[in-house]
Length: 280
Image (cartoon, rainbow, N blue to C red):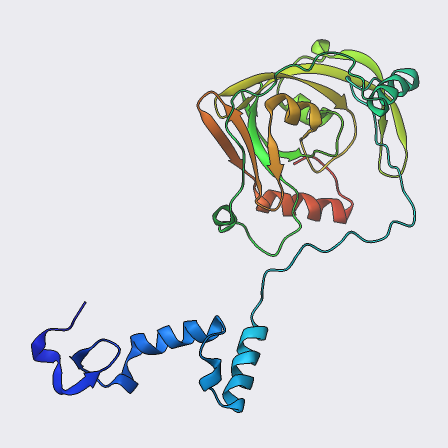
């Protein structure tokens, strides 16, 4: 766009624009064009040695796209196996069978379609704008369980089961008679094993989706009220992201998202560090 004639000085001429208004040496558009050509390796024969050196420093100082780093040498392989589940089995024999099937590419049964929608799930940098950073916070959310708003729910894809702690179960006002005794192995981080637990099925509501969810009722102290593990995550077709402090899942109405509460997450961590794990 040209400036109005009243603003243009007829005494100045620009060879680049072939018009009056400013001098060629003062032309901003020309400078931008020349800089772009220099960056692409053109016109360098007209530069002095000092100018070439400065241009080289500017070019090499900027990050450039590089090929992915080759994988490092693998000196050994370390296998890690965590606790079982209803699908993997709660006995050693059942776990051994399903492990053998996986090793040999066999399916124990045809896969069921668990997802409620066909939309892709992704996370964006913009969704991190409301996240307190830097952080290593766990993903702690609030959901409606058995018609009660329950806070301090840990979403943990490292857990092979859904857990509700006994104190939280009592706070729901549900009858003890609704619990079913179950023999199962709950293995802690340091290897301690709890063989007995109780089981209950409760409705868990998440933004339009109400899913009956089996919980193991564990009678021990915890800073969390519940743990939603892989059974709930997979059943919902959900994808949790601790980085974005959010869990997303498909529904017939599109992708829904539940944000984590970093204040509760840090409060639970603080309670655990104090050694006072009373459910709050």
